[in-house]
Image (cartoon, rainbow, N blue to C red; front, side, top):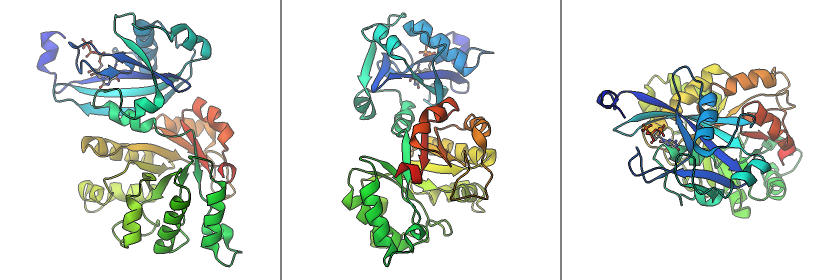
Length: 368
Ligand SMILES: Nc1nc2c([nH]c(=O)n2[C@@H]2O[C@H](COP(=O)(O)OP(=O)(O)OP(=O)(O)O)[C@@H](O)[C@H]2O)c(=O)[nH]1
Protein backbone atom coordinates (compact mmCIF):
# COMPACT_ATOMS: atom_id res chain seq x y z
CA UNK A 1 0.00 0.00 0.00
CA UNK A 2 1.52 3.42 -0.93
CA UNK A 3 2.47 5.74 1.99
CA UNK A 4 -0.07 8.39 0.91
CA UNK A 5 -2.92 5.92 1.32
CA UNK A 6 -1.59 4.80 4.71
CA UNK A 7 -2.06 8.29 6.13
CA UNK A 8 -5.83 8.03 5.55
CA UNK A 9 -6.07 4.36 6.43
CA UNK A 10 -8.48 4.82 9.32
CA UNK A 11 -10.91 7.11 7.47
CA UNK A 12 -10.95 5.82 3.90
CA UNK A 13 -13.42 3.04 3.29
CA UNK A 14 -12.16 0.32 0.94
CA UNK A 15 -14.93 -1.17 -1.19
CA UNK A 16 -14.47 -4.88 -1.66
CA UNK A 17 -16.35 -7.45 -3.74
CA UNK A 18 -16.50 -10.86 -2.06
CA UNK A 19 -17.51 -14.10 -3.80
CA UNK A 20 -18.87 -16.99 -1.78
CA UNK A 21 -18.13 -19.63 -4.42
CA UNK A 22 -19.73 -23.02 -3.91
CA UNK A 23 -20.80 -26.24 -5.51
CA UNK A 24 -23.33 -28.27 -3.50
CA UNK A 25 -21.88 -28.31 0.04
CA UNK A 26 -18.31 -27.46 -0.99
CA UNK A 27 -17.18 -23.86 -0.47
CA UNK A 28 -14.00 -22.28 -1.83
CA UNK A 29 -11.64 -20.47 0.53
CA UNK A 30 -8.33 -18.76 -0.11
CA UNK A 31 -5.62 -18.19 2.49
CA UNK A 32 -4.30 -14.67 3.04
CA UNK A 33 -0.52 -14.24 3.07
CA UNK A 34 0.96 -13.28 6.45
CA UNK A 35 1.98 -9.86 5.05
CA UNK A 36 -1.53 -8.97 3.88
CA UNK A 37 -4.14 -7.11 5.90
CA UNK A 38 -5.86 -9.76 8.07
CA UNK A 39 -3.05 -12.11 7.06
CA UNK A 40 -2.80 -15.79 8.00
CA UNK A 41 -6.57 -16.10 7.86
CA UNK A 42 -8.83 -17.79 5.35
CA UNK A 43 -10.92 -15.59 3.06
CA UNK A 44 -13.52 -15.81 0.36
CA UNK A 45 -12.17 -14.94 -3.07
CA UNK A 46 -12.45 -11.23 -3.77
CA UNK A 47 -10.74 -7.87 -3.79
CA UNK A 48 -11.07 -4.13 -4.20
CA UNK A 49 -13.71 -2.68 -6.49
CA UNK A 50 -11.94 -0.31 -8.90
CA UNK A 51 -13.21 3.22 -9.49
CA UNK A 52 -16.08 3.18 -12.05
CA UNK A 53 -16.43 -0.58 -11.66
CA UNK A 54 -19.63 -2.17 -10.28
CA UNK A 55 -19.43 -4.85 -7.58
CA UNK A 56 -20.48 -7.67 -9.92
CA UNK A 57 -17.91 -6.76 -12.59
CA UNK A 58 -15.22 -6.50 -9.91
CA UNK A 59 -16.19 -9.89 -8.63
CA UNK A 60 -16.00 -11.53 -12.05
CA UNK A 61 -12.57 -9.92 -12.57
CA UNK A 62 -11.21 -10.86 -9.13
CA UNK A 63 -12.42 -14.47 -9.37
CA UNK A 64 -10.77 -14.82 -12.80
CA UNK A 65 -7.51 -13.16 -11.63
CA UNK A 66 -7.25 -15.15 -8.41
CA UNK A 67 -8.56 -18.57 -9.44
CA UNK A 68 -8.87 -18.70 -13.22
CA UNK A 69 -12.57 -19.55 -12.89
CA UNK A 70 -14.74 -17.65 -15.37
CA UNK A 71 -18.01 -16.82 -13.59
CA UNK A 72 -19.26 -14.42 -16.27
CA UNK A 73 -22.28 -16.63 -16.98
CA UNK A 74 -22.92 -17.90 -13.45
CA UNK A 75 -25.85 -16.77 -11.40
CA UNK A 76 -24.71 -14.37 -8.68
CA UNK A 77 -27.04 -13.77 -5.77
CA UNK A 78 -26.29 -10.82 -3.55
CA UNK A 79 -26.08 -11.82 0.11
CA UNK A 80 -25.52 -8.34 1.50
CA UNK A 81 -23.19 -5.56 2.43
CA UNK A 82 -21.02 -5.31 5.55
CA UNK A 83 -19.26 -2.23 6.82
CA UNK A 84 -16.46 -3.23 9.18
CA UNK A 85 -13.90 -1.12 11.00
CA UNK A 86 -10.71 -3.08 11.63
CA UNK A 87 -9.12 -0.12 13.40
CA UNK A 88 -6.28 0.11 10.88
CA UNK A 89 -8.65 -0.12 7.90
CA UNK A 90 -12.36 0.27 7.16
CA UNK A 91 -13.92 -2.03 4.61
CA UNK A 92 -17.30 -2.23 2.95
CA UNK A 93 -17.78 -5.79 1.71
CA UNK A 94 -20.36 -6.45 -1.02
CA UNK A 95 -20.95 -10.16 -0.77
CA UNK A 96 -22.36 -12.41 -3.50
CA UNK A 97 -23.06 -16.10 -3.60
CA UNK A 98 -21.77 -17.72 -6.79
CA UNK A 99 -22.93 -21.23 -7.57
CA UNK A 100 -20.62 -23.19 -9.87
CA UNK A 101 -21.86 -25.76 -12.34
CA UNK A 102 -20.54 -29.33 -12.09
CA UNK A 103 -18.10 -28.84 -14.98
CA UNK A 104 -16.49 -25.78 -13.36
CA UNK A 105 -16.17 -27.55 -10.03
CA UNK A 106 -14.64 -30.67 -11.62
CA UNK A 107 -12.11 -28.51 -13.42
CA UNK A 108 -11.01 -26.60 -10.31
CA UNK A 109 -11.63 -28.91 -7.36
CA UNK A 110 -8.03 -30.16 -7.18
CA UNK A 111 -6.33 -26.76 -7.45
CA UNK A 112 -4.26 -26.21 -4.30
CA UNK A 113 -2.98 -22.79 -5.30
CA UNK A 114 -4.55 -19.81 -7.00
CA UNK A 115 -3.08 -17.76 -9.85
CA UNK A 116 -1.52 -15.32 -7.34
CA UNK A 117 0.24 -18.12 -5.46
CA UNK A 118 -2.25 -18.14 -2.58
CA UNK A 119 -3.37 -21.45 -1.08
CA UNK A 120 -6.91 -22.53 -2.03
CA UNK A 121 -9.10 -25.02 -0.23
CA UNK A 122 -12.54 -26.50 -0.84
CA UNK A 123 -14.22 -26.97 2.53
CA UNK A 124 -17.40 -28.59 3.72
CA UNK A 125 -20.21 -26.12 4.51
CA UNK A 126 -20.85 -27.61 7.93
CA UNK A 127 -17.20 -27.21 8.98
CA UNK A 128 -17.11 -23.69 7.53
CA UNK A 129 -20.21 -22.63 9.49
CA UNK A 130 -18.89 -24.33 12.62
CA UNK A 131 -15.95 -21.89 12.51
CA UNK A 132 -13.27 -24.47 11.72
CA UNK A 133 -11.59 -22.08 9.28
CA UNK A 134 -10.56 -18.77 10.90
CA UNK A 135 -11.70 -15.82 8.78
CA UNK A 136 -11.45 -12.02 9.21
CA UNK A 137 -13.89 -10.64 11.80
CA UNK A 138 -16.18 -9.06 9.17
CA UNK A 139 -16.87 -12.54 7.80
CA UNK A 140 -18.71 -13.63 10.96
CA UNK A 141 -21.84 -12.01 9.53
CA UNK A 142 -21.40 -13.85 6.22
CA UNK A 143 -21.27 -17.19 8.05
CA UNK A 144 -24.50 -16.31 9.89
CA UNK A 145 -26.17 -15.38 6.57
CA UNK A 146 -25.14 -18.74 5.14
CA UNK A 147 -27.13 -20.53 7.86
CA UNK A 148 -30.40 -19.48 6.15
CA UNK A 149 -32.05 -22.48 4.47
CA UNK A 150 -33.58 -22.30 0.95
CA UNK A 151 -37.11 -22.73 2.37
CA UNK A 152 -38.74 -21.45 5.56
CA UNK A 153 -42.13 -22.71 6.75
CA UNK A 154 -44.58 -20.37 8.47
CA UNK A 155 -47.15 -21.84 10.82
CA UNK A 156 -50.90 -21.57 10.26
CA UNK A 157 -52.79 -19.07 12.41
CA UNK A 158 -54.70 -20.57 15.33
CA UNK A 159 -57.98 -19.61 13.61
CA UNK A 160 -57.21 -22.23 10.94
CA UNK A 161 -58.03 -24.82 13.63
CA UNK A 162 -61.05 -22.86 14.95
CA UNK A 163 -63.42 -25.80 14.33
CA UNK A 164 -61.59 -27.93 16.92
CA UNK A 165 -62.62 -28.02 20.58
CA UNK A 166 -59.02 -27.21 21.56
CA UNK A 167 -57.55 -25.19 18.66
CA UNK A 168 -54.10 -24.88 20.29
CA UNK A 169 -53.85 -28.67 20.73
CA UNK A 170 -54.91 -29.15 17.08
CA UNK A 171 -52.36 -26.52 15.95
CA UNK A 172 -49.64 -28.33 17.89
CA UNK A 173 -50.54 -31.79 16.56
CA UNK A 174 -50.68 -30.54 12.97
CA UNK A 175 -47.34 -28.76 12.99
CA UNK A 176 -45.62 -31.49 14.95
CA UNK A 177 -46.60 -33.95 12.19
CA UNK A 178 -46.18 -31.81 9.10
CA UNK A 179 -42.93 -29.87 9.55
CA UNK A 180 -40.17 -31.40 7.44
CA UNK A 181 -37.09 -32.80 9.21
CA UNK A 182 -34.75 -30.00 10.39
CA UNK A 183 -37.17 -27.39 9.04
CA UNK A 184 -36.75 -23.71 9.77
CA UNK A 185 -40.12 -22.45 10.93
CA UNK A 186 -41.42 -18.99 11.71
CA UNK A 187 -43.87 -19.71 14.50
CA UNK A 188 -46.79 -17.30 14.57
CA UNK A 189 -49.58 -17.68 17.11
CA UNK A 190 -50.64 -14.08 17.36
CA UNK A 191 -54.30 -14.93 17.79
CA UNK A 192 -53.54 -16.82 21.04
CA UNK A 193 -52.73 -15.15 24.36
CA UNK A 194 -48.99 -14.64 24.76
CA UNK A 195 -48.65 -17.14 27.61
CA UNK A 196 -50.71 -19.75 25.73
CA UNK A 197 -48.70 -19.13 22.56
CA UNK A 198 -45.41 -19.47 24.40
CA UNK A 199 -46.46 -22.70 26.12
CA UNK A 200 -47.56 -24.16 22.78
CA UNK A 201 -44.36 -23.13 20.99
CA UNK A 202 -42.30 -24.63 23.81
CA UNK A 203 -44.24 -27.90 23.46
CA UNK A 204 -43.63 -27.93 19.70
CA UNK A 205 -39.88 -27.54 20.27
CA UNK A 206 -39.93 -30.35 22.83
CA UNK A 207 -41.73 -32.67 20.44
CA UNK A 208 -39.61 -31.66 17.44
CA UNK A 209 -36.05 -30.96 18.72
CA UNK A 210 -34.77 -31.10 15.11
CA UNK A 211 -36.48 -27.85 14.00
CA UNK A 212 -35.03 -24.31 14.04
CA UNK A 213 -37.50 -21.72 15.24
CA UNK A 214 -37.90 -18.07 14.29
CA UNK A 215 -39.71 -16.50 17.24
CA UNK A 216 -41.79 -13.31 16.98
CA UNK A 217 -40.50 -10.67 19.36
CA UNK A 218 -43.99 -9.51 20.27
CA UNK A 219 -47.60 -10.35 19.54
CA UNK A 220 -47.62 -7.48 17.05
CA UNK A 221 -49.42 -4.98 19.23
CA UNK A 222 -47.38 -4.69 22.42
CA UNK A 223 -43.78 -3.73 22.95
CA UNK A 224 -41.36 -6.59 23.62
CA UNK A 225 -40.81 -5.29 27.15
CA UNK A 226 -44.51 -5.73 27.96
CA UNK A 227 -44.80 -9.34 26.96
CA UNK A 228 -42.80 -12.49 27.66
CA UNK A 229 -42.62 -11.71 31.36
CA UNK A 230 -43.52 -15.23 32.50
CA UNK A 231 -40.92 -17.87 33.30
CA UNK A 232 -42.08 -19.97 30.34
CA UNK A 233 -41.58 -17.01 28.04
CA UNK A 234 -38.12 -16.22 29.37
CA UNK A 235 -37.03 -19.84 28.96
CA UNK A 236 -38.47 -19.80 25.44
CA UNK A 237 -36.40 -16.77 24.42
CA UNK A 238 -33.15 -18.63 25.13
CA UNK A 239 -34.22 -22.10 24.03
CA UNK A 240 -31.49 -23.78 21.88
CA UNK A 241 -33.98 -24.34 19.03
CA UNK A 242 -34.44 -20.58 18.55
CA UNK A 243 -32.41 -19.44 15.54
CA UNK A 244 -33.68 -15.87 15.24
CA UNK A 245 -36.16 -13.36 16.58
CA UNK A 246 -38.58 -11.78 14.14
CA UNK A 247 -39.60 -8.13 13.91
CA UNK A 248 -42.65 -7.12 11.89
CA UNK A 249 -42.61 -4.24 9.40
CA UNK A 250 -44.52 -2.12 11.94
CA UNK A 251 -42.15 -2.99 14.79
CA UNK A 252 -39.18 -2.15 12.60
CA UNK A 253 -40.57 1.29 11.72
CA UNK A 254 -41.51 1.82 15.36
CA UNK A 255 -37.93 1.03 16.30
CA UNK A 256 -36.68 3.53 13.72
CA UNK A 257 -39.04 6.32 14.68
CA UNK A 258 -39.01 5.70 18.40
CA UNK A 259 -39.45 8.88 20.42
CA UNK A 260 -36.78 7.54 22.80
CA UNK A 261 -34.16 7.68 20.09
CA UNK A 262 -32.60 4.79 18.28
CA UNK A 263 -30.18 3.69 20.97
CA UNK A 264 -32.88 3.29 23.62
CA UNK A 265 -35.19 1.56 21.15
CA UNK A 266 -32.39 -0.77 20.08
CA UNK A 267 -32.04 -1.79 23.71
CA UNK A 268 -35.62 -3.10 23.62
CA UNK A 269 -34.58 -5.61 20.94
CA UNK A 270 -32.98 -8.54 22.78
CA UNK A 271 -29.29 -8.92 22.04
CA UNK A 272 -28.98 -12.69 22.18
CA UNK A 273 -30.14 -13.91 18.77
CA UNK A 274 -29.88 -12.99 15.09
CA UNK A 275 -32.85 -11.08 13.69
CA UNK A 276 -35.16 -11.61 10.72
CA UNK A 277 -37.27 -8.61 9.74
CA UNK A 278 -40.35 -8.17 7.55
CA UNK A 279 -40.27 -5.43 4.92
CA UNK A 280 -42.80 -4.36 2.29
CA UNK A 281 -41.14 -1.35 0.69
CA UNK A 282 -37.99 0.73 0.27
CA UNK A 283 -38.63 2.66 3.49
CA UNK A 284 -38.64 -0.43 5.70
CA UNK A 285 -35.65 -1.91 3.86
CA UNK A 286 -33.73 1.29 4.66
CA UNK A 287 -34.74 0.86 8.31
CA UNK A 288 -33.63 -2.80 8.22
CA UNK A 289 -30.26 -1.70 6.78
CA UNK A 290 -29.92 0.82 9.61
CA UNK A 291 -30.72 -1.82 12.22
CA UNK A 292 -28.29 -4.25 10.56
CA UNK A 293 -25.46 -1.67 10.62
CA UNK A 294 -26.12 -0.94 14.29
CA UNK A 295 -26.06 -4.64 15.20
CA UNK A 296 -22.71 -5.09 13.42
CA UNK A 297 -21.24 -1.97 15.07
CA UNK A 298 -22.36 -3.19 18.48
CA UNK A 299 -21.02 -6.68 17.72
CA UNK A 300 -24.46 -8.20 18.27
CA UNK A 301 -25.86 -11.17 16.31
CA UNK A 302 -26.75 -9.72 12.91
CA UNK A 303 -29.89 -9.29 10.86
CA UNK A 304 -29.63 -12.55 8.89
CA UNK A 305 -32.45 -11.94 6.48
CA UNK A 306 -35.54 -9.98 5.56
CA UNK A 307 -38.87 -11.28 4.35
CA UNK A 308 -39.89 -9.03 1.44
CA UNK A 309 -43.55 -9.54 0.61
CA UNK A 310 -45.97 -10.14 -0.98
CA UNK A 311 -44.22 -11.40 -4.10
CA UNK A 312 -47.42 -12.90 -5.55
CA UNK A 313 -51.03 -12.72 -4.38
CA UNK A 314 -51.97 -14.87 -1.41
CA UNK A 315 -55.08 -16.42 0.08
CA UNK A 316 -54.21 -14.96 3.49
CA UNK A 317 -54.07 -11.32 2.20
CA UNK A 318 -56.41 -11.26 -0.81
CA UNK A 319 -56.80 -7.46 -0.65
CA UNK A 320 -53.08 -6.67 -0.74
CA UNK A 321 -51.71 -5.99 -4.21
CA UNK A 322 -48.68 -8.24 -4.87
CA UNK A 323 -45.34 -6.69 -5.80
CA UNK A 324 -44.73 -9.05 -8.72
CA UNK A 325 -41.26 -10.46 -9.44
CA UNK A 326 -39.85 -7.32 -11.10
CA UNK A 327 -40.72 -4.91 -8.29
CA UNK A 328 -39.66 -7.52 -5.74
CA UNK A 329 -36.32 -7.85 -7.51
CA UNK A 330 -35.81 -4.07 -7.43
CA UNK A 331 -36.38 -4.14 -3.64
CA UNK A 332 -33.89 -6.99 -3.14
CA UNK A 333 -31.18 -4.76 -4.62
CA UNK A 334 -31.68 -2.23 -1.80
CA UNK A 335 -31.15 -4.73 1.00
CA UNK A 336 -27.86 -5.07 2.88
CA UNK A 337 -28.75 -8.61 3.95
CA UNK A 338 -30.15 -11.78 2.31
CA UNK A 339 -33.73 -11.51 1.05
CA UNK A 340 -36.41 -14.15 1.58
CA UNK A 341 -39.38 -14.19 -0.81
CA UNK A 342 -42.81 -14.47 0.79
CA UNK A 343 -46.35 -14.41 -0.59
CA UNK A 344 -47.90 -16.93 -2.96
CA UNK A 345 -44.68 -18.98 -3.31
CA UNK A 346 -43.84 -22.67 -3.06
CA UNK A 347 -40.48 -24.33 -2.21
CA UNK A 348 -40.01 -25.24 -5.88
CA UNK A 349 -39.82 -21.52 -6.74
CA UNK A 350 -36.43 -21.13 -5.06
CA UNK A 351 -34.56 -21.03 -8.39
CA UNK A 352 -36.84 -18.29 -9.67
CA UNK A 353 -36.37 -16.36 -6.41
CA UNK A 354 -32.58 -16.64 -6.83
CA UNK A 355 -32.80 -15.32 -10.38
CA UNK A 356 -34.65 -12.29 -9.04
CA UNK A 357 -32.17 -11.64 -6.21
CA UNK A 358 -33.38 -13.69 -3.20
CA UNK A 359 -31.77 -16.53 -1.27
CA UNK A 360 -34.82 -18.28 0.23
CA UNK A 361 -38.57 -18.64 -0.10
CA UNK A 362 -41.11 -18.84 2.71
CA UNK A 363 -44.79 -19.54 3.12
CA UNK A 364 -47.52 -21.48 4.86
CA UNK A 365 -49.62 -23.81 2.70
CA UNK A 366 -47.01 -25.19 0.32
CA UNK A 367 -44.32 -25.47 2.99
CA UNK A 368 -46.11 -27.65 5.56
N1 LIG B 1 -10.89 -10.96 -0.40
C1 LIG B 1 -11.43 -10.86 0.80
N2 LIG B 1 -11.19 -9.75 1.54
C2 LIG B 1 -11.74 -9.67 2.77
C3 LIG B 1 -12.59 -10.70 3.26
N3 LIG B 1 -13.01 -10.33 4.50
C4 LIG B 1 -12.46 -9.13 4.80
O1 LIG B 1 -12.62 -8.49 5.81
N4 LIG B 1 -11.67 -8.71 3.74
C5 LIG B 1 -10.90 -7.47 3.73
O2 LIG B 1 -11.15 -6.78 2.52
C6 LIG B 1 -9.94 -6.21 2.00
C7 LIG B 1 -9.68 -6.85 0.66
O3 LIG B 1 -8.72 -6.19 0.02
P1 LIG B 1 -7.73 -6.88 -1.03
O4 LIG B 1 -7.70 -8.35 -0.83
O5 LIG B 1 -8.08 -6.36 -2.36
O6 LIG B 1 -6.40 -6.20 -0.67
P2 LIG B 1 -5.31 -6.53 0.42
O7 LIG B 1 -5.49 -5.68 1.61
O8 LIG B 1 -5.28 -7.99 0.67
O9 LIG B 1 -4.00 -6.18 -0.34
P3 LIG B 1 -3.52 -4.81 -1.04
O10 LIG B 1 -4.06 -3.66 -0.23
O11 LIG B 1 -2.05 -4.89 -0.99
O12 LIG B 1 -4.06 -4.87 -2.42
C8 LIG B 1 -8.86 -6.53 3.02
O13 LIG B 1 -8.71 -5.46 3.91
C9 LIG B 1 -9.41 -7.72 3.75
O14 LIG B 1 -8.91 -7.80 5.07
C10 LIG B 1 -12.82 -11.85 2.46
O15 LIG B 1 -13.54 -12.79 2.82
N5 LIG B 1 -12.21 -11.88 1.23
